[in-house]
Every structure is written in structure tokens, then in C-alpha cells.
Image (cartoon, rainbow, N blue to C red):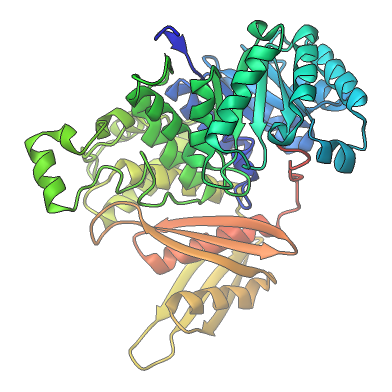
Length: 516
């Protein structure tokens, strides 16, 4: 293999990543992430599943119309209505791709599809041919390929290549494969399919056994030239292969891989923080590449070695993936133009002068509370502001909490509910518990608190606290996020953000109609 081979990075954060319970995104949030992925130089952005709902259709359409440098992809089952819908959503794309799929494993064909193998082949070919009427760039996935009969896989894939599919995506849908096994599968398919040279082989691996990245890399070693992955490994169940890990593994171990990506890896941290902030899924400290401890050294032996020569204990530079210790020079005396320029550098823009002015006002409020403003603070500020704008039915007007040694904490809240001022108070086992109970005394949401998580956005005692709240109601799960230098206020904001989401009419059907 030539070292100049390109490994195509297909990011599905906006589609499969969104299928994580509670991770649903608005159209504007998807657009913000898509623009960050474009700046990262991702090759293909899978923007969503257009047939799932009007909201998903609009989001795919918006991404398609606003992204120029990356291919925008829409997912579609091997059904005429899905493909027509995807084609319409992608009509405005500079480069559009339709990704269609149908299950090929015996258990899926028999128990889910109720179709014979011959019918599956016929449906797959029909779907690809219809998709080609909308775009020359068509991808096909045999769902649950890892548990499919290899002879049947070869038959289906040969047929869809003849029908016009230019990319063949082999998914390990349930995360069942082992690296040596999955790599061998890719090698056998490339060898046994007569027209295999006419298509790019792709892989989409799930992380149920913690092997998504390992399986993806094994496939690349055996000739796959596209990897489907997500920022921070977000995704259905245990998630997908993490984009940042795949990209940096291939780039760091060029002695093993005959390819590389075209990504600007210095944008990885920006994308990671953005996705974490919007979805409310914090990144664990020991997460490879993007975790807070990824480039930290505590052992004396390690510290001594790094001080003498960085490469003794670091196989890549922190700066190469976007880590930086440079502090924001913006403060309460900074002007609006400096604020605008810095946000633009972070990939954040404004549609109007009014939006800029509102964000600048919030920035000034934050600058009055803490002396040093970091990039993470700015991203949290914009993310929370976007959430507030999208969910304004219930708003926090004021909060008073009394917590004293030997006394039961008490919270008093004033909320705006549909424009009307409402007051509530409650006792609790702690200040946060009392606050949540006081809010519930007003809204009576009937939800169950499934997760409460607190993270410091930056260092220092004046750091903003970022709170994630996960609520469940009747099987529906939503995440809420809030940030403030006061952790109790941040908690109240996060709880109300989740309440607003769960009390909205359910505009978006869950896209788990089929998963690759």
C-alpha cells in the first residue's frame, strides 16, 4: 500500500451519536456541530435520518445547505419513501450522499424483516438504483453484517456495486466482533467479491465490548478505506468508534497503517467540547486524546522523563489535538469586536447583531464573576444561551437557598411559567435536592431523576460548574445542561433545561428504526 492512501472519515455524531438516550439535538445545535466538523475537515458528515421526523428532515436540509467542504449524508432504509425523503433533504448540498441499508443476518431477515434472502437482495438493488437518481454518491450497508453468512454478504454486495453503490459499509451492529475476526472479514470480502475494486470498503463498529476502535483499525489494516465514527465515541448503547482515537492512532502509527486522514487534528478538542456541551455528556478524565488527564503526568518518574525529553512518555503532542494552556485575554474590559473575533476562531458565529449583543451581555456578566475567561467558558456560555433560547417556556427568575450545619436545607424559587410568575419552596437533604424539590412543587413534572453530574469547566475556585441532569418520563429520556459559577444555580438551570425538553410536544420520533 502507498503511504499516500487517504482514509475517509465519515462522522455520524449527528445521526448515530444523537441516538444516545437524552442526546437529541435541535436543528441549530446540529448546524453548529456540522460547521465545527467541517472546520475539522471531516470528509463525510451524516446529518441525520430525514424520514424520522419533520425536525430531522429540516436539520439535514439545513446542514446540506450550509456545508461546502464536506459531503453531507442522509440515512435511509432500503424503502422508496425513505430514499425520496433523503434525496429531497439533500437537494441543496454541494456534495450529497444517500446511505441506504437493509439487514442481512439470518436473525434479522427472519425475525425483523420477515423477508427471504432473495427478497433482501432485490430490495437492496432497488434502493441503490433509486438513490442513484438523486446522487452519484451512494453508500450501502448490510445491517448486522458481523452475524451474516459471508456467502450471502458477497452476493448482496456484488449486486449493489453493480447497481451503483460506490461505498460498501460493513457494520458490526451489535459490537460482537473481535479485531482479528473483523479484519479477516474485510479481507475476505475484498478478495471474494469480483467487482470489489469498484467500491470503497467502509466500517461502522459499535462499542458494546469496548472494541469499536480496535475493530475499525483492524479493518483499516485489511484494506478498509473509510471509518464511520463519532466525536467522543458518542452513540447508541455503549457508543461508536471514537473519531479522535481512530484518527490519532492511524497518524501516530504510520509504521503500521498505509494511509492517513486529511483532518486538521488541532480542531479535535474544539469539537469534543462542543459535542459534550450540547449533548450534556461529559468526557471522562481518562478518556484517550480528549480526556482532561490524557496528557497529564503525576508519577515522579514520568514527570522527570517528560521534563528531560517529552517523547519518553508522550507518543503525540497535546497541541496536535488542540490542547492548549493559553488563557483567554478577554475580561470585563474587553470590547465586543475582540469577543466576536475569538468566538469566530472557535467556530461560533451569529446570524444577527442582536444575537451578538445578547451573547456579549452574558459574557460581561460572567466576566464580573470571574477574572479569567477561558475558551471552555465561552463555549459553555454560547451552548447554554442556545438552550435557553430554544426552551423558554419555564425560566428561572430567582433562587434562594439556605444551608446551615445541623439544619435542614431550604430552597425558595421564583419561576416564569408561560409568562406567569410562580413561587415555590421546599426542604431537602442538601441545597441541590431542596432546589429540585422546590421546582417540582411548581411544575409537577412527574419525572424521575436518573443522573446528576457536576464538572468544573476550567480550573480555579471561581470556575464555572457545568451540571448535567438526566430525567426520565414514561420511557422518554432527556438531558439538561446548565453552567454557572454558583453550582446550585447551575443545577437549577440544568434541571429546568431538562424539564423544558420533556414537557415539549414530542416533535421528533426516535430514529432507531434500524441501526447500522
